[in-house]
Image (cartoon, rainbow, N blue to C red; front, side):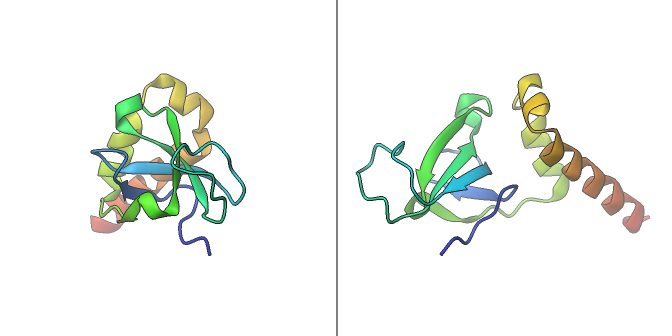
Length: 106
């Protein structure tokens, strides 16, 4: 059963920094660990690839990353300009949430 959603920041043993889930798939042969397709695979953006993607299995996720909204925006900002063009919806949603959060705290 899928536990993580598009837009979730997660910790994974494939990155030293939190990764962002971009997509998921039940039937994916892109993971080089083995050919067992019973696991759910997640397409994630990671810091080591400047936000570029890698497929990981659910078993490589170590839970949700505990990040405030500003840290999430900062991670995306460091992925490069191409990321914004490719994922405007995710990026803009976080910007709006950070603005709402700032207004509520005042």
